[in-house]
Amino acid sequence: MAKSTPAAAAPEEAAAALRLRLRRLVAAVTAGGGGGEEAFEEAASALAALRDAELGPPPKDRAGAGAERRRRGHAEAAAVPEQFLCPISSEIMRDPVVLASGQTYDRRFIQEWLSAGNRTCPQTQQVLSNTILIPNHLVRSMIAQWCTEKGIALSPLENQEEDLVTNNERKSFSELFDRISSSSNISEKRQAIKDLRLLTKRNSSFRAVIGENPDSISQMISAVSNPELESNSEVLEDTVTTILNLSIHESNKKIIGDDTKAITFLISALQSGTMEARSNAAAAIFSLSALDSNKAKIGESGAMRPLVDLLEHGSMTAKKDAASAIFSLCKLHENKSRATKSGVIDVVLKAISDESLTDESLTILALLSSDHETVEEIGETGGVPCMLHIIKDDQCKRNKENAVAVLFSICMYDRTKLREVVEDENLNGSLAWLAQNGTSRARRKAAGILDKLKRTIHKTHYSFPFQDCR
Image (tube, rainbow, N blue to C red; front, side, top):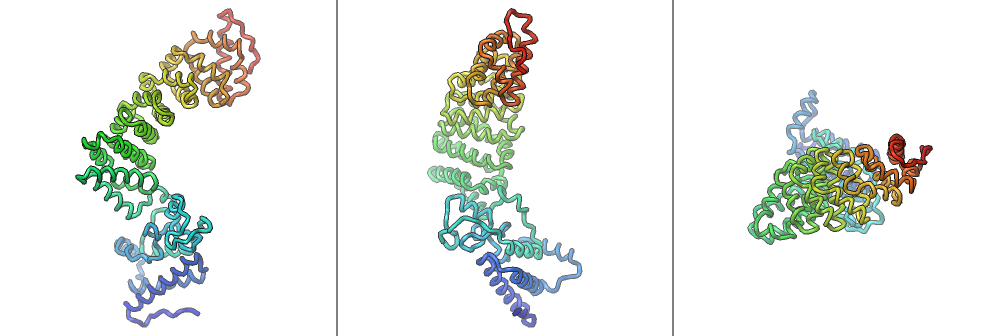
């Protein structure tokens, strides 16, 4: 039976009664994860009645009423029904879902709770029988209608994943930076930096806070430049790793790249930090170099030489981080010559010979082989026999592809190397085989080399029996 609206009651009593009614309706829906269309209609009716009780009858000029509600903004947002708030974030749910316990949460935050390894309901502490999240369409519709009535605009659902920041996260961020920047206690500063590293590692939305505080990177770097902290290797590692964690957030790449102190700090860590700090500094540079503007700044700031040094002398993890950073930076043409002048050719050829970092080294060489001066150096430092060895003996198709791409460039730029290639081909037939069996790019490059050899073979006394290798 339909419940009667207490229209004859005093306005304050009517509003209170309606609020209580609405609270009970929403509580029943969120606890059970459903309720059906009838429950929704009843809740919608209560919402409309509550609006009339609090604001008076709807004015004829609905556009004017909407503008007025928007002007009231945050004051009305403070009156959000508790059941529309995510129990974890304390903010309006954008994508409400029901957990196995029957409780409703915002998908973004409960997913993060579950991804951290938790298998209990945050509210009830009940052990979950499963981690399936069921969309709560009813509550989502009720929230949407309430927001429309109140003139509140929620951020689009598709933009939440990286940028949804809670007030608690803002508060934690502010408190941490106050401790880092203002505390006179060195031990407290060290702990705050470590806490910041851990938070930015495990909480993706916490990384988005930096967008609201773009000066905080410089503040953190200035704070750790204190002589009592500067010499502490653990503080350096924590600070570098925090910058790495923050750089993962897409919009932070430009913020960090535009910070005059950040890149200089990372390069300094590359040069003088512990192996972990150097490795993470290289990883941060790789992350930041996703932007072309950052590629230029990093290259101009002198990062290439310490990266090449790390590629040569670092731990295996550090070498891979350095190789990734060098490769990404060299996508910008100006950085190719910087890498060559920093000695990268000798280092990667040695790594290939030692079979210690073959995949990454060949990838770098293939990228650099579009530069004429670099190709000449590859040819002069033993690149031809090294590439021929990979084409003949390496089992990885991608490595063969990169090796023949480098060899193709050498053959096109330096005719003096053709004799060496002809001799190897007469002996092993590796190019003819690759022209038939390699990846599509490898087949094109191998065929191009063979064609070049055929067109120049009459100028030498070498035989070339592979006339029909196409």
